[in-house]
Amino acid sequence: MELIDGKKIAAIIKQEIAGEVENMLVQGLKRPHLAAVLVGHDGGSETYVAAKVKACEECGFTSTLIRFEDDVTEQELLNTVDRLNRDNDVDGFIVQLPLPRHIDPQRVIEAIDHRKDVDGFHPVNVGRLSLGLPCFKSATPLGILTLLEKSGIETSGKHCVVLGRSNIVGKPVASMLMQKAQPGNCTVTVCHSATPNIKEITRQADIIIAALGSPGFVTEDMVKDGVVIIDVGTTRVPADTPRGWRLRGDVDFEHVAPHCSHITPVPGGVGPMTIVSLMKNTLLAAQHSIY
Image 1 (cartoon, helix red, strand yellow):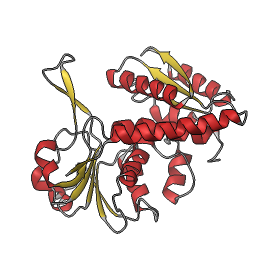
Image 2 (tube, rainbow, N blue to C red):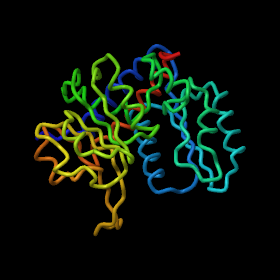
Image 3 (cartoon, helix red, strand yellow):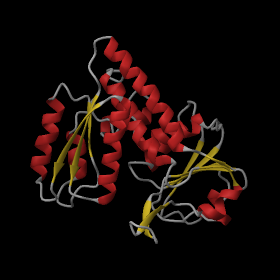
Image 4 (tube, rainbow, N blue to C red):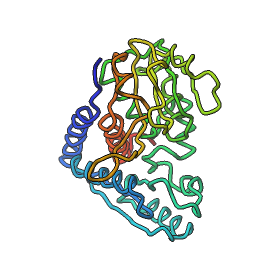
C-alpha cells in the first residue's frame, strides 16, 4: 500500500508556480491577483480561506480578502461580485461556499465573470468542461486528477466509481475522468444515495473517488485488492483533541488501506491539492491562457 502524499505534491507544484510568477515579473508583467469573498464565520470556510491566502504568499500572488457578516444582503454580495468583475487588477476571484440561507448561491455563481471564475463553478466553465474544451476546471476534481497523474496511476481503460454527485466534486470529476485524455479515458460509474447496490459496484472498481461527505462510508467489504482510493471526505467528528474534533474521511482508512495499491490520507491528501489547483487556475487567468 502506497500513501498518496497530497501535501508533498502540492508543495512541488507551488514551487513551480512561483517560478512562473518570477518569469512573469522579469517580463514586466504584474503579479497574479486572487480575491476571496468570505461571508460569516463558518469554521471550515475560515480555515480554507486562510490556507488560500497562505498559498498565494507562497506562490508570489497578490491576495485580497473581502469579509461580510452573515446578515449581508444578496444584493450587497452581487454588487461586490460586479465590482470584482470590473476590476482589471483582479485576475480571478472566488465566493466561498456555503453561503447563508437567504442568499441564492447559484445566482451569485452565475453573476461571476466566467473569465475570472477560478473555482470553475460558472455554467460556461461547467459546459466547456463537459465538452472537453479549455476552461477553468473545478479545483477539487482538478486536484484529484493531478494526484493520479503525479502518482503514476494508470487510468486509461480502468473502471472508476465516483461516490457522490455534487456539482463541486462528483459530477465534474466523473466528466473529467471519462474524457479521452491522460489522466482520464476511464469507464465511469457514478453512485449516490439512491443507488441500491453500491457494494456490488464498488467491488468492481479499479479506482474509487469517495466524495459523499459520510464519514467511514467505504468499508473493507466494499473494495477489491489493489484498488486506488481517493478520499475527498473532510467531516469534522468529535475527538479528544485540543480543538475537540478531527477530520474524518469517507473511507474507513484503518481497515480499507491494507487492500489498496494507493490511497489518500485525510487530512493531507485531496485538501492541499484543491488549494494548489486554485492557484493553477489563477495563474492561467493572469496569463489569459483560457479565454
